[in-house]
Image 1 (spheres, rainbow, N blue to C red):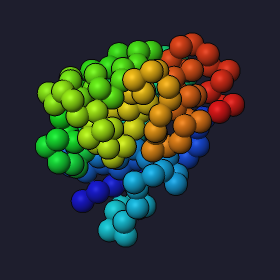
Image 2 (image 1 turned 60 degrees about the horizontal axis):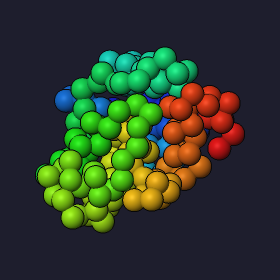
Image 3 (image 1 turned 90 degrees about the vertical axis):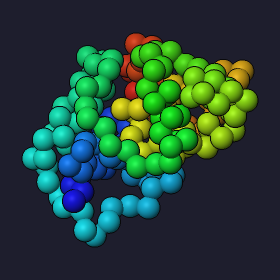
Length: 166
């Protein structure tokens, strides 16, 4: 059974979802590629993984956490999971291109496919897809919106005052 709770981040309300294996979703309200909460999910603000996710997200947004330490259980295809695993290797404050992401995922030359898988990442911020940029360094695509992507990257560069402005 899936459990959920919400978290009010500086970038807007987020829906957190967990199952028995770990965190399976972190979604901004009105995020692209998210259909919404399902009726059979149970609201459980005391679920241990959800409570821990809220604590770690608060630390991240406060500039006190650079890595998350949560059990993850995203649903996706083997290709998507390979891309999400590669995204997880991108360091705090770093960015890489979609082409580099494809290479790290073991599918060089598949930047567009890696980009599509990135857009379907169900665990945004925790699996830091905001750190993937265009080949020329431009901010392209983010299911949570480009303003949020810009703000998250600014936070990681130490520009905390820009976090709530984007």
